[in-house]
Image (cartoon, rainbow, N blue to C red; front, side, top):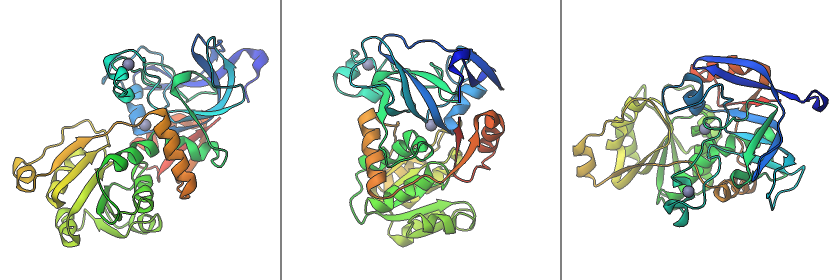
Length: 341
Ligand SMILES: [Zn+2]
Ligand SMILES: [Zn+2]
């Protein structure tokens, strides 16, 4: 608990690339259009590396990472309507669209030309308190605890939206590549959306968990040709790749059914190489998908409650964020690590 009389709060900030440290920051009132949130939980996402390691986009340091934030509104800034003190809210990767650029005017809010990113351009949720734009807020259903809801705000909405727009229909073969933070949620969503769900991961270790989460089939990509195994099943209508090792993605294209679609949601640093022959032969397509809008996040939370979909989380106190982040980067997190304040 933060001692409000102290007028400071604890946060884990990146002082310069590669350096995470615990600091006390001054508590400031929310600006116009903002709310202040007393953070209860914040998931650790691979994309946090953008802030922690630096070098991808312009970031002004020091910066507090974290974009899977759940907490309660603690103060309202000028002009904020529709939100009240004490309301349980979440903030994902997108920190609020501008409302006036060409993409916003077309209703493409995730493509806003002036989109800020939580924990990248603004301080995020590795902290006891944070400020957020009111138009970035997601309402959290009572049925979800803060630690359950947090991973759904980035990992969850990312795969939920990709599956919704994938074009797959009930009964279609949908493969989820990677059974980690995003993948273990994608397997559950795919199963509950009515797809014949195939989980693909390296080794046999994830087979039990993937099947327990709803996968009808499991392919060990380290022990067999995953594309050939998909073709034996009939070919994938959709493959959603959640891995951050792009080299592992390329060979899967050959496992798509005619007119199939590879959707990339895992963000690795290297390029994804695709054989033109594989693209042309089966008339397949490759696309990406970026998170979702606030209302789409609320849809994914409601679907998770409706279908009893939950992230498998390991909770870690804020003070141990550095070690938890390092474990996530070494792929040693079981599924999702969530910081608690
Ligand atoms: Zn994320
Ligand atoms: Zn805009």
